[in-house]
Length: 112
Length: 114
Image 1 (tube, chains in turn blue, red):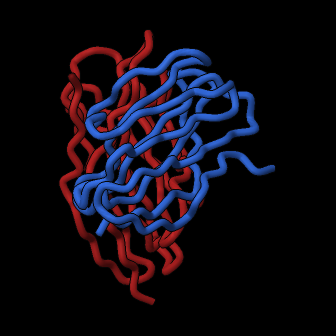
Image 2: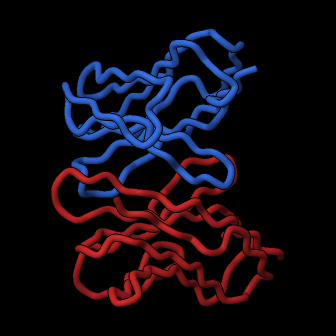
């Protein structure tokens, strides 16, 4: 049982480069989320998708875009990476928004 | 908007010591409450949750938490910690009902010495 799968696990980018973080869940969950985790800041919500076909901004959406490709997949794109986007990114999913979230293993991104 | 405050950022204990991690939130309405744990190098996992009913909630690995509505608190406790409890602990709160997303606290880093 894979749960929530994120790729890649590690990535180093140069400032200005673009990349897409992939996330897929096999639990038939409706809601999916992208968080970033920074030391001393906890988890901050970047974007979420309450259901297939919808996306909404979270607390820190600037510099990011998302796509809910289908019910399983929710990708996060950095169009022009900046050093401030160096972080650990977690994707999560939940059956609905009023239940607990299940997290992926995370992507450690460094922007130099 | 609700906010979540975890008072202890770093806690260091010896094995067999008792643990209590504080969590307070700011929203005055009905809430759902969660504690997550993140072991070194791993993803977040749910420890326990409170939605309604008995305010004393028991979770996995001997953890429990008590919801005290009058104090807007949901503190995490464990009577006797083990070295394997070394991890980061996150409290999360969401407004009950509707389409609200949980807000996470900043986390508490727990180190347990053998």
